[in-house]
Length: 410
Image (cartoon, rainbow, N blue to C red):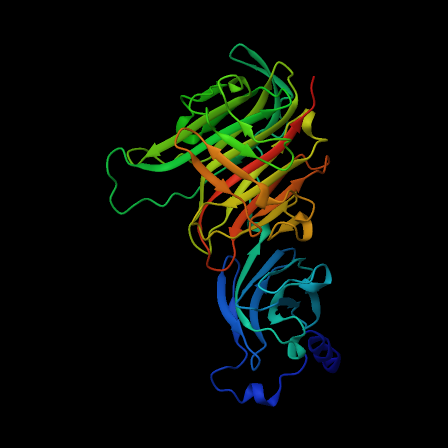
């Protein structure tokens, strides 16, 4: 039995050559890791794998990602407490050079498991470089649904509105060392562009605004001159005085004089049954460090549950943000994963090099590139899903969120 266990290990890592062990300063690493940790190491020709030991409880939803740089083609294996190989990242998709190896595993046993961080080809491989390994337990992720049954239609102000999209998030705010009175510590701007007759209304709520919610608005203030370029549009969408009825913008800010905005909920609805397509652009989110992760609870409206909703994450100009996206269902199981646009689960999404947005009077401009990412929500059985956003390796910065959706006309 012992021989069988070790033969299974060799399938993944093969043997460690004598020359590898002889390298005093470049030997394979054996170290402990726990949920929520992010670690950085290197793979070389002499040390082509590292072992990370993880204590696992029965039923844990283990999620592991290995973000590679400097020419490495990453591979992850997972051994259970008996030394048996229970998961490999390359069984579903082989990671690219400088890409991300990824696996998830529902633990069937408990005890000390071993994560093997290595390279494609193991001892026969030729790639080397650095990597960042992240380990999480999705059993620790709380997916709250304060209103699991969204209203299909509702009245707000003088309008009868049809719900197209609702999403909720919380941003971890890092306050400056010294807060100047009136200094903005949080800034979010939401701009909705209606297409094919869609007349948008925004409803916004946050913890700090509970006693004075911004109920519903169709304000087009400060949107004139905004511009949107997307491959799905026949021509660029330029906001003019004549097209203002199909555009809505809301800016939400907070200064150091008040509490953080906390949980924020945004709803996009259409007036009086005006269906069509819409593009929602959200500015202001940020990944602060390599351990930071943002999460959105995304819910398509009841009448839009059979439609496709695409979500794109785009780094700001001069941002080092290189997003990685994971989509979870109500059971906290990962249903989709995306690193760079055009690969794996995001292969059928828009070419982000053709996406460009200019927003508001300040003319803030954003341009997508091939390192940005996107996820498609298209399962009518999962109208409510959680999208998590993090950034590869040590990259950080602000990012733009773009929702592209549709609402059937009433």
